[in-house]
Amino acid sequence: MRLILSIFLFAAATLCNAQVSRLGKDITYAVELHGETSDGDIAPFWFTSNKYGVSSIEPHSGFLRGTLKRSIEADSTRKWAIGYGIDMAIARNHVYEDLQQLYGEVQYKGLRLLVGAKELPMEFANHELSSGDMVMSTNTHPIPQIRLEMPDFWDVPGTNGWLGVKAHIAYGWYTDNHWQDTFTTPDKRRTNNSHYHSKALFFKIGNEQKFKLTLTGGIRVDCQFGGDAWNLTQRRDDNSIVDFSYVNMNNGLKSYWNALAFGGNDPNDGDFKNVEGNHVGSWYGNLNYQGKGWSVRGYFQHFFDDHSQLFLQYGWKDMLWGIEGHLPKNPFVSTVVTEFISTKDQTSPVYHDATPQFPIQISGKDSYYSHMVYGAWQHWGMILGNPLIISPAYNQSHQIAVFHNRISAWHLGISGDPSRSFHYRILYTHMRSWGAYDYPLTDTKYNNFVLAEMTIKPLKLKGWSLTGAFGLNRGDLLQKSTGGALSIRKEGILR
Image 1: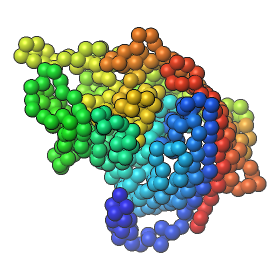
Image 2: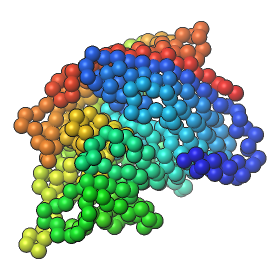
Image 3: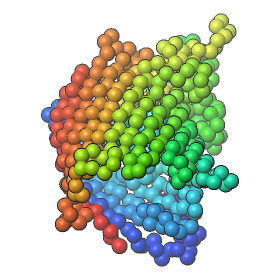
Image 4: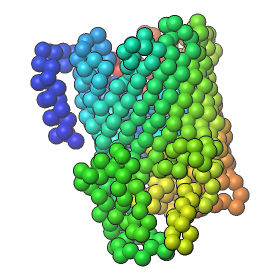
């Protein structure tokens, strides 16, 4: 990754020779010391989730973190823009420490190239208050990748600003070999050296300057493919000859094309060919209204696993619905987000491949975030999508699997700014699980998750901030836990 980044920075400097002198300017720094403790066997849920993986499920943990970066927005008025960053952490009771981010990016007008591992925001979800995106949330460590994107909506010529397009395509590499090898026992399923692919296309209809109502939406599809796999299982009706104790998955250039085009098949598919890799995706829709000093947005996400709910063949029963409101300036509440998520249907509990005896394909039993090769849609033990579908890191059986993907949940997030130096946020989630079709529960289990967090930035101590948080878990799904966290942070301009 360091070699790729070095090549990228050299190429960027060559292409932008006239601009190189500014690369040492507008550099910012941040140093943070964080610690947390709780009385249970695990940390409160919202202490751990949606923290880009700089968190731990352990009841007592902490880290010292340092960041240097040059934001690409520093060149927002130029045709060529260049950004880079390095972010490191020394952690206690974390599964991951050391290098959190290392990246370089260059942008020409509206087109940006990113190389490296960078914390990327969610496409349409509120980073601070949402429960998370269904495909790619902020729940785990950044995946090193090469990513070409239009980061902002590009106005289609001839539409007078009434139609915009936004898109990206990326290929990357998973880095959790060590975690998988140490988390699982020798007889459990695991993979190493997997590859990553992502693509998305979004549209915006409306012109905020002329009409207050706009519609945005589109589709995103991600994929995990390639690598090496151990301890896979063979179907009873599969007569193919494969050594399922170890399978070398496809890793050539053709696999990169298959990830893009939903093509190919995995070496262990045997008599029942499927597409290559683990594909997940979501349709997005957002309706925005911008008032004078306030705004409201209604949105949905429809998740699909492989092809079965890609279109309307089986109906869209599993959805995330949300409303986000930004209130007029006041000292009490600034933003409110409420969401409802249901993943109980998953195209019914029946899956059957077409056979000579029964030549009908029934594409049900989707088992969200699960996969027969890669175990789960995860990285370093944490679900890549919405964290309310419980991550493998919580599995006491040390299996890389998802045991609770048939859920429903209500989520509420509130934030406010009582003064220039004080900010708070509150999260409350009530969720209920029916287990999974392969691991059904005889009775549903539930959890309540709470987070109350406040940040103080003294006006006389420029760049300093102090954040305190209270969190708790209650219910019979994840273990009971009550805890507190404290962070001290200093940030500023290095040059």
